Length: 328
Image 1: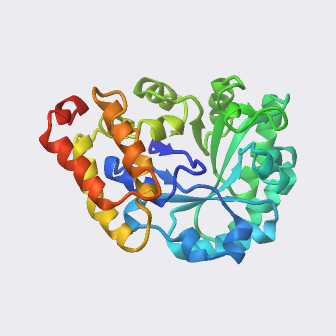
Image 2 (image 1 turned 180 degrees about the vertical axis):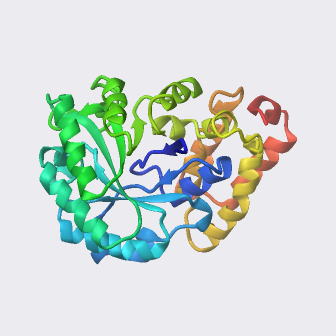
Image 3 (image 1 turned 90 degrees about the vertical axis):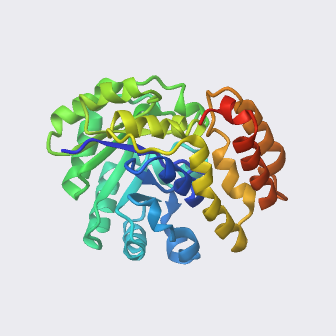
């Protein structure tokens, strides 16, 4: 079975501009959309929500919802847009998501989740997968998790992406839920032992090549979240170390390859800051990165930013000593 590394679906982060940017850095990492609510797909502007650049592939659409027929209809619509996979969100702990009865709170209703998966499978030939947690609130019980995933497996979802933390639904914010509940990787490892024929992907606290290699000895894949957004060039290390691909662009080359996309998008009316905000961490950890972050924050991650400022920073990087300190 092929080992996979993916970038997690992150609200207000993994939009189409970020995914295009990440795909320039990495050709092999699997990318996910932000979560899109099933009802929005059915009733909203489908092209706006679902269109993407084919260069983003392989690409997974993550859907949120808890009404089986609505989820099935959303999948039927989305299948025509060319996604490689549909993922059901069973892990988001936000109060807004809970209010609409999807995300991590669905761990309380395994039979409903099974019905959702079955309906989604019935209308599509695409793989239907789930992203979930190891438990919720005070419940961190391996047997419960195992039974929960057995229902999902029987319904037809054969890939489990498991964030190795509980979701604390009432007392913690979504941001706090990313760090305060302790990690329990052994639960995820044991799920792989008990579901040998399924694909098990581990998520949570993965921020180094060494950690990726360690986890890949015990599961089928690893999903990276915040580390990939705050330090996107981490994906270049993954290309080299995990996928044995040395043909990766330098940081400066990444921005050079972004320029045609930026020009095309701004001509269509996309605001420059909507694209450039995703590049702030490109030089993270390099000497001179503070200059890049400051320039972007002051000049390009604002509503009135214009293309001239992108050309200016590119010229400055290539022709000034800052290029050396930023690291090619």
